[in-house]
Image (tube, rainbow, N blue to C red; front, side, top):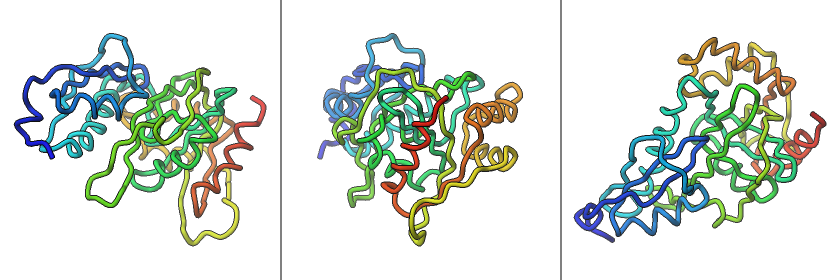
Length: 253
């Protein structure tokens, strides 16, 4: 384990990270350089930074990486406040067409697990914040996934290390799902359409900076209408969602 002093010396910018159109620079000590680059390798870019520097720091590598992820996310969200609809949601796309399902859920309720289990069939765009333009483009944020491995801190693992797919296609919103994992659920997932007002009530609390937008509820309603309505999905295991996504993403535009 590295000491705090070892992690703090000679701190330099070691990475530029792409997060839904924002470029976040990360500064770290030489000891943290390799772990940062490994964890964030699928989000690295050569583009110039567009936010202030985010510091990778902590008493050891595990702590530094654990707290770096939300710090980068916060910097990117702050930079796009008022511009994009940003939902606490995973985003998975058909790698051939770019048609994208956004899976909305509260923190700690299954987005990362769903991303891990489904990201080998569908392209992984994010497991944390789905940022959507007014015309329905879902901007990628291929951050490391926070995996529980028995310790008190989550391990930060690059998507490619988990075998998750990527896509070069422009990704467009094709399905908007409010997911609810219920271990007692029996059988195939249930998929129920939501009235627009109910969809807004379910999705708005799982958003970032929505009130800072011009006519925020109208913006949300427009995205809901763009995909023909939001759906609520109840399921037992995230792997059970694969046929649901396959059917929705195969639908013609």
